[in-house]
Picture 1 (cartoon, rainbow, N blue to C red):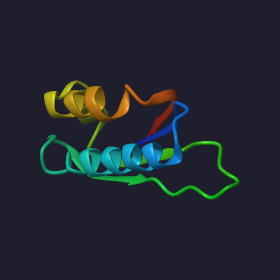
Picture 2: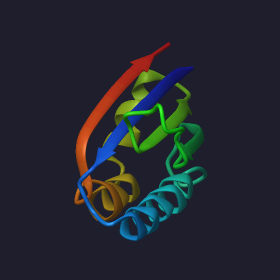
Picture 3: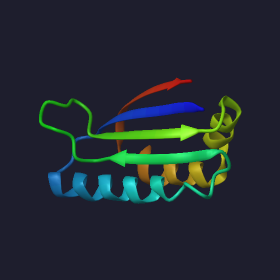
Picture 4: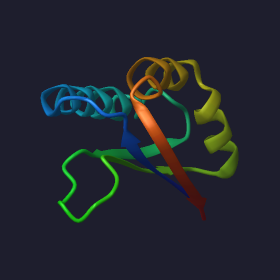
Length: 98
């Protein structure tokens, strides 16, 4: 199994807009489970504590490193990332591990 963790800092926006952006990120990223082969689980956290310096966290498990590569290029994932994530993210940090 491979763990794939992402942290995003969103671009500056009014809090109401950020809330909607985070909700859309969560809904659409979590919907990839069952669509992308090898994606075992995916959870998006959008309510960080005040001590956090990230706005959104993705925590996922994939069957293998090969499955991770397939996830990254899968058309459904690319569409979600291009529509609901990349336009709003200022900073992205990633850590993958077994």
